[in-house]
Image (cartoon, rainbow, N blue to C red):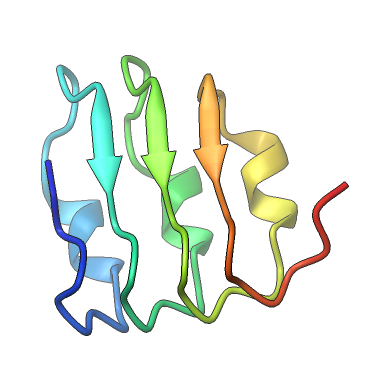
Length: 80
């Protein structure tokens, strides 16, 4: 699912959608700051999550989410 470049700032609505078969979710080039909702979404088949070029500062929630590849380039988080 490609939702990049849409000036999205709030992804809470994703919590109401079903993602059981989704493998790629692109949310790059938006205005997302808060990604806590990702912990509550069923992303068991998600392989790639692209959050590049948003306004994310806290990536700690991503440690609880099992995704093969998470892209965070261009955010204000420290990549370790």
